[in-house]
Image (cartoon, rainbow, N blue to C red; front, side, top):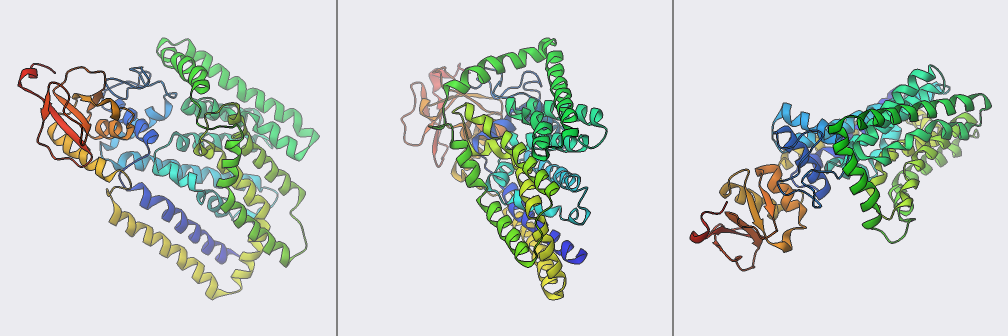
Length: 479
C-alpha cells in the first residue's frame, strides 16, 4: 500500500495547493481581514503598539484604540511586516504559514489518535483533504481571518490533550493550557473550547480509569488560562487593552449587534459546510464496507466520536449569541475532519490496497496530484497581484495614494463611512485615514456623482467609483 499511499498524498498536496495558492496571491480582501492586516501593518510601522493597536487616526466604533479583539494575532503578524516589509503579499504569506502549521499539527493529531492502529497512521493526508475542501476553510486563508491563527492554537491544544490522556498528563495539560490561552488571546472566548476536550474524549470511550485523568487535565488547563489572565490583569498596559475589549465588545456588542435571526443558524451553517466532506467520507466508508465484513474497531469509533464532540464544542456555544457567521466555526473543523477521517479510514485503506494492485491507476492518481500542484503554481504566477475583488476600488485607492500624501487625514462623505474596504485599502497601502465628522481637511473623498462638499473643489483626478476633491483657495490653511 505504500506506493498507492504516496500517490494519494500527492493528490492531497495538489488539491491543497489548488485551493490555497491562486487565491492567496491576489489583491483584495474581505473587510474583516483587511481591518486586521491594517492594524498589524500599523503596529509594525510604529502607529499603535501591541497593547494599544490602531486602525486609523479616527478609529473604529468610536474608539481610537482597536479593541475589537485581543491583540495576539495582530502582534504576530506585525513581526512579519517588520521582517519582510510592506508588500501586499506579506499578510498572505502569514496566512499560508498558518495553513501549513495547522496541516502539520493535524497530521500529528491523526497519528496520535491511531497509536493502536498503526496501519492507518500513514493516511495523514485523508483528514487534510476532508478539511481543506470546506469552502470556509480556504476562504479564511484567502482573507486573513483571525480564525487562521486561532485554528493553529486550538488544534495544538487538542493534540496535547490526546497525548496527555496516555502519558505525562501533567506536562501535556500545562502545554495544552498555554495553547488554549493563546487561542483565547487571539479571538477571545471562542478559543476556550479545548478546555472540554479531555472530558469529551473520556465520555466517548467511557474508560473508567481515564476519567480522573481527563478531569485533572481539564482542571490544569483551566488553571493555566485563568492564571495567565490574572497575571495580565495586574499589568496596567495589558489591562488597558483587555478591559475595554471585555466591557465594550464582549459584554455589550455581542448582545447589541445581531447578524442572524435564530440561534440554530450556526448549526445549520456547520451542516452545510460539511456536506462535501460528509459525502466523500461516506462514499469511501461504504466502498470499504462493501468489500469486507469487519466494522471499525470500537476504539477507533470512540476516538472519532470524541473528535466530533470536541469539534461540536467549538461551535455549539455560539448559539448563546445571535452574532453568528459561518466562518466562526472554522477553528473547530480540524477536529471534525479528523473524526470523519477516523470513521472512514479503513475504507480508504482498502481502496488504496486495491489501487496498489493497479500500477497504471496508481500513477494516474500520482500524476494528477503533481499536475494539480504545478497548475496551482502557474496560476499563482499569472494571477499574482491581480485583484480578486474590488478591482475598481483598488484602482481608485492607488490613484488617490498618488495624489494625497501618506499619513494624511482626509474628509469622507458620510455615505461612504461604512465602506470599510475603502478605509482599509487607504490605510494599508497609503496610511491615509478618513474622517466623516465634517472637519476641514486638505482633501475630501466622496461618491462618484456627488457634489463637492462646501469648501472643496474638484481635484481633476479621474477615478472609477469615487471622486477626489481638494480644499479651495479659501481653505488652504486647513490641514
